[in-house]
Amino acid sequence: MDGISAAKKLARTRVRARRRQLLDRRGPGARAEQAEALATTFLTWVREYAEGLGQAGLSGLTITAFQPLPSEPPVGMLVQDALTAGMRVLLPLTVRHGHDLHWAPATADSGDGVPEDVMRGVTLVGGELPPEALREVDVALIPGLAVDREGHRLGQGGGYYDRALPLLRPTVPVIVALHDHELPTDRPGELLPHAPHDIRVNGVLTTAGVTLLR
Image 1: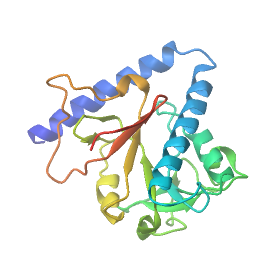
Image 2 (image 1 turned 180 degrees about the vertical axis):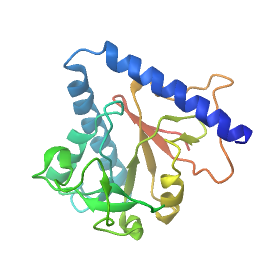
Image 3 (image 1 turned 180 degrees about the horizontal axis):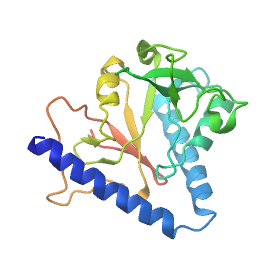
Image 4 (image 1 turned 135 degrees about the vertical axis):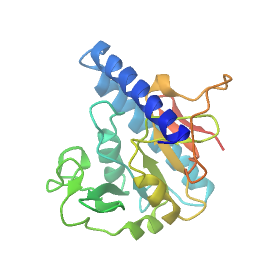
């Protein structure tokens, strides 16, 4: 294991431990409040972003989202609200023994926007849509453990998004959902370990809204 890989592994361990502590301290209604705030602020930002491109409203836009782990920011309400607004939402699928993300369209009649036949975001036979479905996306919302002020993202270590994101059109913004305490700062020494092939992101989503980094 090289120095960058070792540093990433240590950083992941620290972030996961901090997230576990957060879960242990939170009251029963905190996650629901967070979900509502994430949905409201994200869709408000997407609407403003689309209007800047000459698009009136949210209907017809395509975004990516994800099925959150218990420790990840709850984006299920965001998915449902996006579908209600007429948006198309693509959720990632991993394929056993495969290296690329496939995609499943979220449906409004399944819990948290997750298709009923998708178990924990994993399928044995491949996604309903191929990796190239990302070429139709207008805004990419993705998971992550951390992001620094220069847009370097720390993922779970599988490299799936580093392989997937180059399929997006170059102008598509990539936004990482984070908890409020994970918002990047300008304090010295807080850049994440990163390799040349790591894809940089454009911003982060917290309950306060979307913060653009570049």
